[in-house]
Image (cartoon, rainbow, N blue to C red; front, side, top):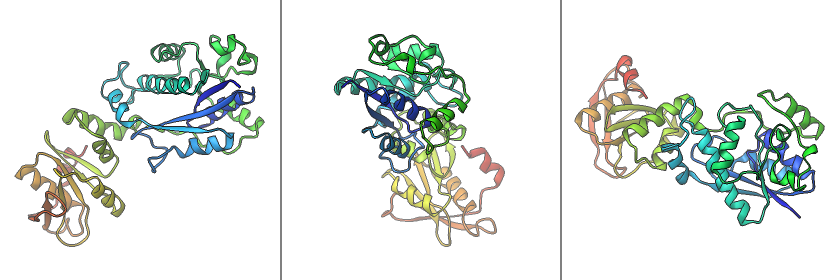
Length: 333
């Protein structure tokens, strides 16, 4: 039996595209790519939506964790960024290359994707689709069942492996055609459309740009830190991250490195702060003022803030008053 590999995000488009090929009697296996920038799951193991979709479609799912490799794409995308810091075209090329390697490894004949012509401005224009196919070395091997009849026939269609007349001609950003098709196929349980990449989020993009500017040799730990708390740029060489609640305080403690400085109030309730970079007396004082601002009693009087270079290190105390809001807003990333 002929086998195909589906890029399965778990969204409606990828579910429908996979189903259209399955209905032609072709074996399909799903692949999903997970990075530190994904918002689809907090578990860091697999996208829950793609796993659920694979189970309902009755197909196997292979998940690839590609964060370390993908960072290189984010740092230097050939085709640039979108509105924020999302390298959409380079991202698609990178993931199609990975999917193509797996396709060849398992003896599959072609790839399936739920892309719809004109649905997304950067990566789902016909010109962009051609660039993606060329740069990923997959020309003629990517079948887009939802828009196939609006595109040039692929090799599987030309060879009669896939019946072109059973594919569709959907285009544009409206989801109504897909929803009608889902109803006809008896598919009712599918996720609502939503952004699944932090790089397209404006607030996260600000933090990411700050990290890339001041620490171009950043690590996965640095990126995980971007996803938590309030962030403050104290100097070119020093940054503070402040937890917003008990859960974030715990998560921040799990990300502490040996060269970080920990901040917290000496008594009473308050946030954990992680100082990362080169801290001098001025930046320690500024960080302590910020911690005081978010601590109980910090707005009413001066309080003592602990700082130490590691959980087991000697504690240093600084007596400070809370930083005023105007100064706080200048330092906030």
